[in-house]
Image 1 (tube, helix red, strand yellow):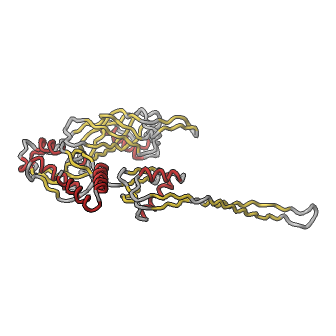
Image 2 (cartoon, rainbow, N blue to C red):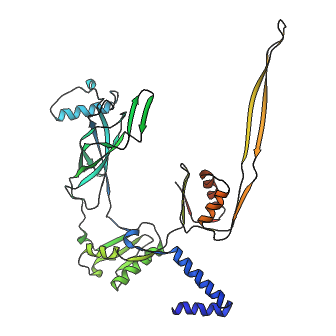
Image 3 (tube, rainbow, N blue to C red):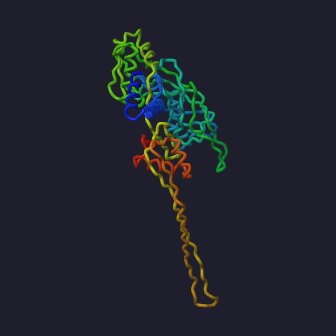
Length: 380
């Protein structure tokens, strides 16, 4: 309150009472627009605590003639190996695999996974199978990057699409060569981390920011009334477990994650050039800039006229090309945005130009190159 009064008195002395009040009102409004309160758990993760990717190779059986063809050799070899483990010897060259498909099986091993937990697995065809509809995945081991098997998967495959018809008259919805098995995987190896052996808990910001890291450390130190956290860089904040004197590391993490801090979102524009999708944050501001948009279309067509000689004459048939050139130069349209214009004003101006999504992408890239866009431009 004292700081606000001192600012108000200073503004009144220099430029008068009304101007000072307007400046304070604008400052408060700008602060409210650019900051908001979020919990630490929403903007950070714990270093070393993450999911792990698993992958395996297996076969899906029971298909209705939509499996791999006989030319897919690895499918026949896999089927022959599976039959050999069951005591049946067959020749891979004599096997018909129309009802069998070779697949890759993938899953995500969650944090603190323990034996007996179930996983959702994804099954993807790697041969020339038409569909996995109605198939059953045989027992498949899922391995991590270290080559160890952490889970096993088996069960009926469910699809989010279908294919119907024969020959050229085929109706297909979504991707029938990829399916899922809910709770089809079972964890076989303990991967849980003993948190109580940790002397330091490291928080990692999802988006690197020096200011945000310092504010998170300050909020934690204020909560414990002493310095237990320290921001090491723009992403990492270390918490001393012994200095926090918590009952356990789990209780310490729970207490820290439920603290609220001021969040400063980065001004960012994300563009997908393939689909023409544009997503812009509300904090994106523009400097004074003019946009001129016009379209010049040129159409060139060639036609041929044939001239034939009179009957019983010695003349020859001639072909003469006629080239037609048409140019359509539409009137140039322009918009002008003032200093500090927001996203709504920019979109309204671009719609006034009747620009489509791909033209808007090009216009935004040009505005950024001209220094008129005060935001990060990310093209994906």
